[in-house]
Length: 243
Ligand SMILES: Cc1ncc(C[n+]2csc(CCOP(=O)(O)OP(=O)(O)O)c2C)c(N)n1
Ligand SMILES: [Mg+2]
Image (spheres, rainbow, N blue to C red):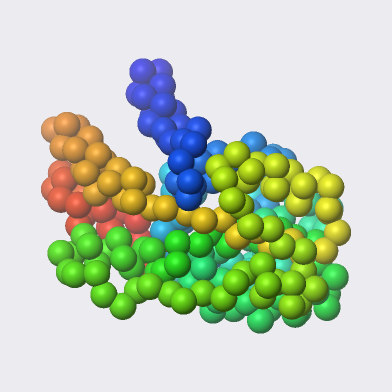
């Protein structure tokens, strides 16, 4: 019970964080409150995936779709389109990073032509956030990972899609509510500015510290137990899979 309480408290950390751009933990907490239990959230591949895997509570099977094997960027929008085709009665949300969204955004045309109903969140940090994290963790200088994005609202509008830009932390939840429950028809795109700085600190320093404390009692023989025992930040990747 104590462990469960600790775990829940840890996973809720940041859920009400008021800073802007939003932290991933707050984005996930706000989204979880708006999406019905049978709603389907489909992830692309980027830094936010780690936080969804940690913090997004799935209440029913197949309601959080993520690709942790090949982890191809660009997969989030098509997987949401497939979910919306199969389950037109359910609320469907695609969650993409700015990089991943731009790898397959032309599929908006297909989604419109098929008259799908779905909400797309573009988490914008103006870069390949996950690779920035890894680059830093490996001790390299920051290099080559910033993106010069289009104006996502204008881009979406050019397809005839209703779009929103989140401009403060509290607005996100209202925009989500509007997209999921008022403007239910068609495609809606929401650009959500995100900042991973604090979240990365937790991954790089706080979690390895926790592992260290508990390393005397890891479960034997697994990759995760090896990661716990080593407590080195680089060992995190073996429990998170390839990106
Ligand atoms: C097709 C493809 N190319 C490259 C990668 C390696 N990769 C994993 S995450 C990532 C950056 C993702 O950036 P973005 O979509 O903006 O998400 P963020 O991490 O910034 O939230 C890259 C390049 C990949 N997984 N798939
Ligand atoms: Mg990004």
